Amino acid sequence: MASYWRIGVLLLILALPLVYSASARGQSDTTRVYLPLLARPPIITVQFAANANRETGELINPATEFDVGLDLLWVSVRLEGYAPGRLMRLDFTFPDGGNLTGSSRTITGQDFRYTTAYCLTTAFTCDSGRITLPSGPYTARVFVDGRQVSEAVATIR
Image (cartoon, rainbow, N blue to C red; front, side, top):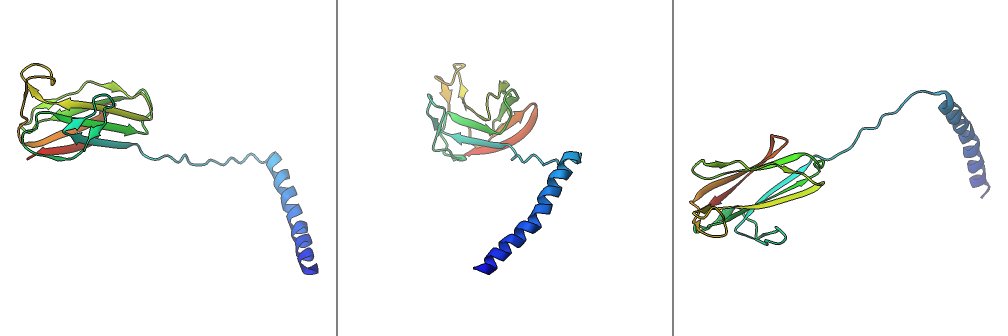
């Protein structure tokens, strides 16, 4: 037991000058320490589905391949880690190369979600007059502040 006591006293005696010199040095030292900001890159998720919950915007059974006969294709974008106030745009390309340029939407929070549906219609709305979508690749491109940040492809076979 005496040896533990001697080790404790010895450690205390050795530590005192270090504590004193560190505090004395801290009062007159102008050295600054800069720590790096650790941040993860933003996460972008783009999903497709044949159905969605119209109240919540949640896709039902997301997939990237669909059977022929589909007349409505849902696309959902989730942006995590982007500062509020930035602008997001979703462009959509059909198999024939036709491109729909989306309108810009303001990102309202760190976990921003946007869901919409695409169709071919004779009634100017996807609620009626829909025509079966042609087979081939459908591409969704996500832009933030005018710069493309993601691209996803769904295929109707």
